[in-house]
Length: 498
Image: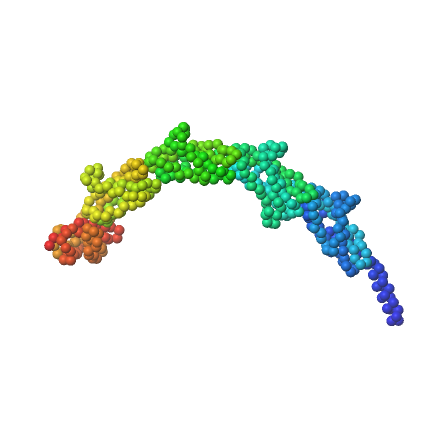
């Protein structure tokens, strides 16, 4: 019985092994059937087949669906990277597997199409105002897939749409940029100004070249764009800087700068950068300027003519006009003015500057001046100034004034709010409040140098409240008494005579 059972098992096993003599054909994976825009070194991939012993594969690749003249490859792995496939061509491929027991049937036949064109990127088609040195950029990807399997990119630039006469052409070797780059580019210079160009690009390898890309056009800039000073600007400094947009591909810039709007007077200059610093600029003068770009092959048109007027006065800023100044040594300030050799300040107690005025001269571009001698209390002073450079001067500024000592009577203090006596004082000074608008105040007595001699808190908690101030520590002379309460200030000149 046992012998009969063993015989049956051996028979079944023999039948099973006989059924597995033919290995199953591989299943193709990628490129999927009908895929287009494939690179010329596309990798063909399929699922590995299960077989007995070592498994190898035979791959056929042909431009004919009948595989009349196939390229045959034998590999031990389930993929094959192609090389130098023709551009814009439909290929058919299939695979069969071989193991120790035999060879499978052919897999299904898949097809794919290699790419024949790629897209241009920048400058955008129809772009204008392009500099005479330009970067032509084209896409190095087909969708999300990087273009590979080529040796060069070629580009052409022409003045006509048929590219019968080339203005420029060149080739960029593949691998010039990182492998995952999204674009390739080439610099082209010495383009003519105000000219329309057409350009295109293609890929190639040792066996074939793609079709040219779609044609793009661009037009080069016709003139330089000015930046500063803006047209019709006023109050420009005499060290003014002319500025215009830098132009890629320009070797130098030619500019004209003069007081004649027709530029008949010779006033042509050259700058290697996009700025210029005219010399000999005068105060209070209207100037006209224009610029054009140049390289070894061509020169642009003149830019529009712009004008500006230079500054012709200095603007005082502090002390505020008609203000009161507590400091016996005030600082005169004005808005900065540049490009000048110095400034002159006329200073007097007379608004007409006819009472032996002082003339302060300042070198350089300072914007303030400290009064070094103590000014008189309760005196109004007038001042004006002008700048000078290379024998030329601005007009005198407006006349400003300020008064020393009296800051004015605030909201709390009015003409009858305080009574200060005696004046002149000997050893004692009395301060009497005639109203109750404030309770506390601070008293300060200063000499004419602005130095505080004494200070004391005052308490006026009711009408007619009186405070006594000792003058015993003060020498004979003139002093400034100042009372502050909150934001209000009251100043008065007092004399001590013992």
